[in-house]
Length: 241
Image (tube, rainbow, N blue to C red; front, top):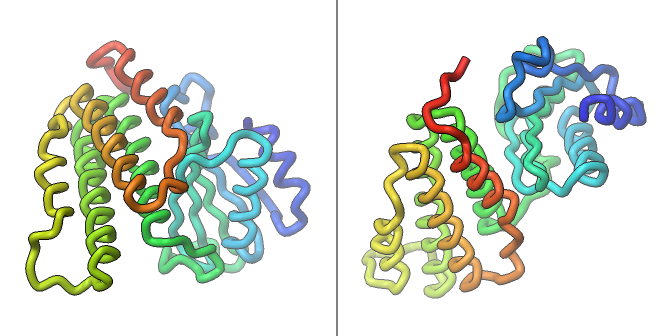
């Protein structure tokens, strides 16, 4: 993938330099199947350049399944999960402010609805949780999986707000309160198989929530389900480097 990314970058005059770092910058034997590809881009207008670069990646390789954004106008990080399950961590930096600390996301990033943003965050966290489980990092895998339940409860809160026409609620008692009990039926994510089972449960629940909210937000979750199957098929307790 890297040579094609170099070609894409070379076609953008705003990109002064691009290099791989992290595990991809070392010897090939040091890269494991669960690694993402870490890239650093030097460019004026890091936010705009990184977003354009991501668009070209999606068009060339595979649509974006989920993403995460952080940073500011001087240093901007865009993490992509493609629908073919390849993952990229792209940091774009202004050549004048290479050491600028991360801060609020620049306003140039396109805004999305609250629910659409929540769905993206759910999918991104679900992929990371699955990868952590594959690496036997149950601590962080469990943390990220429990975050999926929080995303679902926020989705239920948005549905309650829409039903009542306000986000101020003195008391409970709406039909959406039942979601707290519903989520208690998920597997406990305290081993690898518990994590993958809980992710599947929460993903099904998300699709149910989206049916109530806007069915157009529902999409193909097969990339995530394929990843979960692959994690389950991996031999248990593999010794990690």
